[in-house]
Image 1 (cartoon, rainbow, N blue to C red):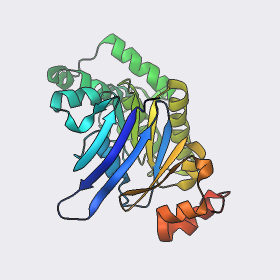
Image 2 (cartoon, helix red, strand yellow):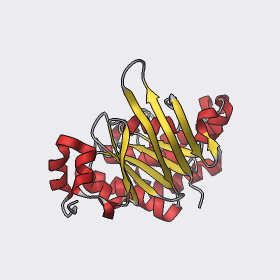
Image 3 (spheres, rainbow, N blue to C red):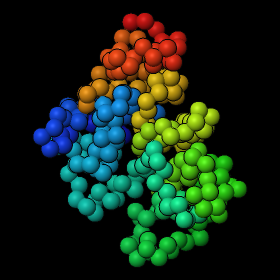
Image 4 (cartoon, rainbow, N blue to C red):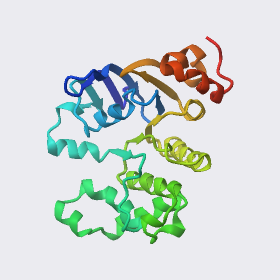
Length: 262
């Protein structure tokens, strides 16, 4: 089976600093739910941003749907990005716009600059937005301004904006880091359902080991810009968590509970 995403020997260096990513490699299958875990500063966000070229990698290869993203010119890159939805820690919504207007912003990558500036959306696009907002339990908030929403509601709007692109893959950069535990569970449940029921591949950066263990088909552990673990949650041991998190590991193992020795 051909992977939807194949990352080979990926390296990213900022200036003369140490490498943010060093020789990173992994593959992700269609419909897979993959968590990327590691301490702050490990390179998780840089990795996601390299995949959709918000940040340009220094070297390596990122094959998405059979195409090396690193070689694409502006027009081709725009086309590929419509297949890759992005969800951010701080939502990146336009506060003065309504929930449905923020959702429709996900269509901008498919529109001419003029249509985008004027906010010209057809009936079909508006109906699609309503349908997605319904799936995410936001029916009652469609015409509310984004700044009137709770953090969990804002993140659901962020997900709906990504879904309206009809993506093959979602990149989620610490989507629950700013949320309370209840809201975080709601967001993770929605992301898992999207993966299982819509067949959309989900890559999510997480700091919480217990959440990664609960939701993932596969976990990628990163420390110091290098991949130090790849495997199913059931194969993750205390030694693996120690390798990923170093001195932080003991607290995380306690939180994760039920992790096997090894």
